[in-house]
Image (cartoon, rainbow, N blue to C red; front, side, top):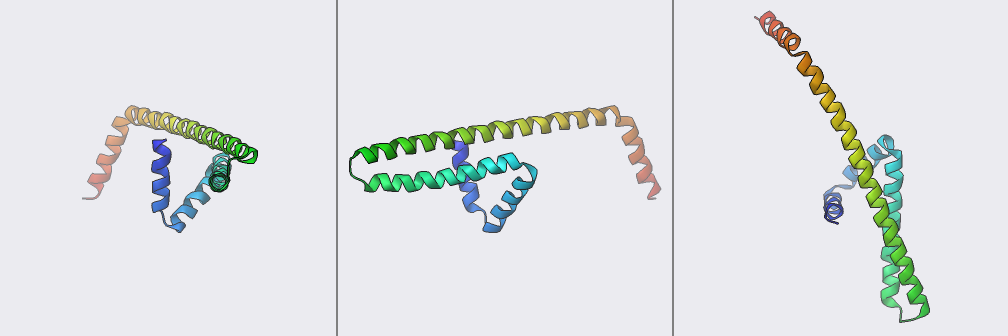
Length: 125
């Protein structure tokens, strides 16, 4: 899909160090997502290898089996990407809930925050 393509383009523009940092962060902050990402990368590599074998093979029962295996692998990759997107949406939703809560807190403390800032500014004179 388009998001996956864009992610791939962004990832290819990253330096190896940036990509390594991103993976390190992901491994520490979201181990499940990291494992799914690693599995997705492995399956992607397998699908590319299998596609090469299929392109080089003549029509046969073995080629048909490889086609079925490739289709199954692509289905697994697709499912992993969907799961990752669902997880990302949930994380964003949790972050949005937290941000809304902080905004409400600031709204409720408006006068206190303004008074505190006023005092800070006047003490600097």
